[in-house]
Image 1 (tube, rainbow, N blue to C red):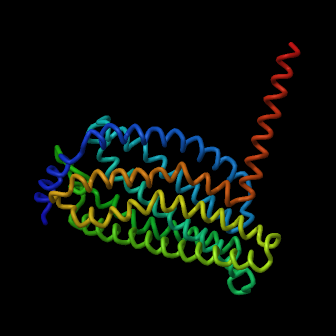
Image 2: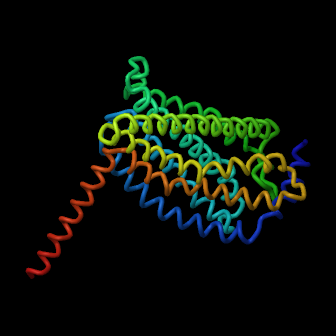
Image 3: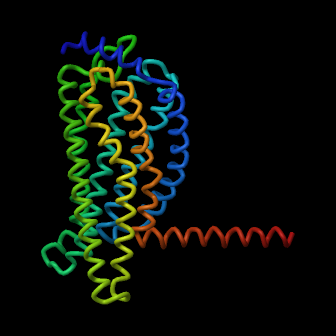
Length: 323
């Protein structure tokens, strides 16, 4: 399909936007943007004041970075959806912030799978001397760097190849060169593959941990299995966030991808896709729950900060009452 036909198709497709996608969803994005800014700002402030004492802390810190980058894209999307900024802002969203959004989302998914794998090794395979090497902080840093490099290599061409002149009415695909559209298809399939590999890995790790904790509880009743059951609850929180935020979008993505060229079901699929994409964006508000439940260092630092704030408030109240 040549660029002229793609533009015609894209112009027709832009008519499938609705009041919901152009006016209601931006309000919801604004709400989660404010909430996520507070939560992730606080999480970053705590996490990056503590040392990399374990592989888990390394992965959680990288999740914070991915969430902050993802959060950075929301204001641009909201402004563009509400019609501010004109064609130049839409071009910036298509070329840069939309690419950064998906880069951050799938990198975060990759770190969720690495966290699940780390918990699996820590709980189920704790006696293996070979697997214990994977618990080293240096190995964790290397895997984290590898995850970022791989995702950047796959996603960066989507920005570089969005290089066509701006038509009056367009969608992001109309701005891509023919090579850019082919690379877009390749990167979409790659990202979906990343999700399903992460999904299978997380399910395997969670099932194995749940079985291990159950058998441990049956064997020694209560005392020895408390730590294991706490780990089970923490990774369960990761599984819940993963299912709420990412599974609906990727289930919807299959029929939507098959209907890219505006068939009769495109309108309904587009609305569903936008709603499930919003659930994926909600991830930046729910990840701090994972940090709190999984990282003892994060919990202790949080409680210490809250206690310090309470002490300062009491002192200020006492000083005010003495005046």
